[in-house]
Amino acid sequence: MLLALLLIGLLALPYLVSALLRMVRRQCELIADQRAEQRRPAGAAAPIEKVAADLRRLRAQLEARENRPGLTGKGMRMGAVRIAYVQVLAEACQRLDVPPPRTGAHWHTPLAEIYRVEAQLRERGLDVRPVTLVDSRAG
Image (cartoon, rainbow, N blue to C red; front, side):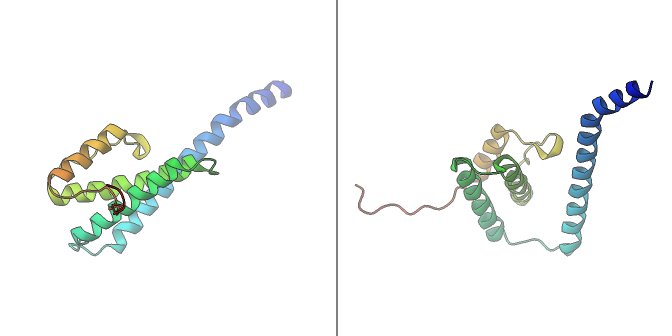
């Protein structure tokens, strides 16, 4: 009987650990959201130029991480940068009257949704692609 309970406990252990990790992640996200709200004064919003600069910086980080092979923890880092990017995209959308990106569970946002929002922001005059210098020797 004791052996059966031990076996059941060992089989349930991965489920319990993953459930605990999900709960901790949700709590961390809630705490981070609360702290962000506390830091931002009521009614004060960052200038649109700062929002645009943040979008370009985060998009450049996403592209750099996607194209860098063999990075330890690449998926987790990409997810964190993408969440930050989507949050700043939503702020830009709010400012320019564009429908914000639709996100799923755990801030998962499909790439098609991100591309849609980027295109609509570009139509409103906010290009989120990083500014690149054109090589003067080409031509």
